[in-house]
Image (cartoon, rainbow over all chains, first blue to last red):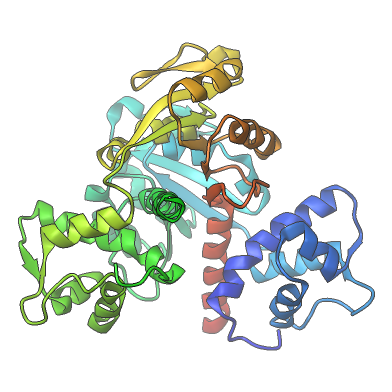
Length: 213
Length: 213
């Protein structure tokens, strides 16, 4: 990599590049120009070239990009060439939906365990896991080299469970609880606040309506 | 409002302000200074004042902000003083999780119907709705004044279903399918690409590891 100081905006766009390149791979496309990729993704070709220049460029002008190579390089930047071990805390509908989503595993994200405090769920089979009680959480994390915890629990429980998991060595959270986790700066948190997303949708609807009045 | 031209970044922050103000309301806090709000939310007080100045300021220097008033004003900007009628297309785990999340209704988002192509799910009760076949979709949308469609279906089906719904008058999509919808510019799409989110988490873990090497 030419430059380690890559803007957040570029990083936010990388998964979308990977998605389109994956589809091109699946369609056996071998090469694509920035112009063609631009039309497909509805961003400017100059934006694409700028983004890729952050990582040394990836391709030769005039020849276009090699799809397989570009896909692999972006996957590497995103850390998808490594295997991650995850647990899910919260075996409700959302936790089950995430556990059952096969594509995560293809990308190296392996769900190892799922936990809930509701004893009616204990032993329930979700994919190839059985729901375990919260009392098993700490031992399981230590014994199974867990690096990511997915929190699909109510916000009232999330902060406490996150603290507990950090003490057991978890350094990354995928947080669906509707609250900010107060963890140390070296712990990574990626929030998915669904209500916030729905409100942004509502904002744009409202703004469009008032513009059309 | 003083200025209609509000940056995307400010809009992205509004739901988070609302969340914290809601918690203050629930704790019966009546007034809060930008300094106190800053400590709570871990953003600078100057950022908060700048953000609020986009909407005329909301408060008097020295007196702090009235929590209830500020909450209501931000809710209004986000369009939460209106009622929205939603349908969910895709009654799998994720669709069910969203249907069962009570907080959306509190904010004015009412789920009116849920649809799936899997006939084993027809008639299944989810909250106060029964899963309906896709053949009922168009009539239901026209008869129930649906303004938002939530897509929790595989990407192979999403683009076609979105086109069908746009023809019936749906102007907004909350899209969980792992694809971009190709709809007209005046149709609003808020994407929740969960894989992209997980990849961003993976990127930060990988970057931190290489910095610590």
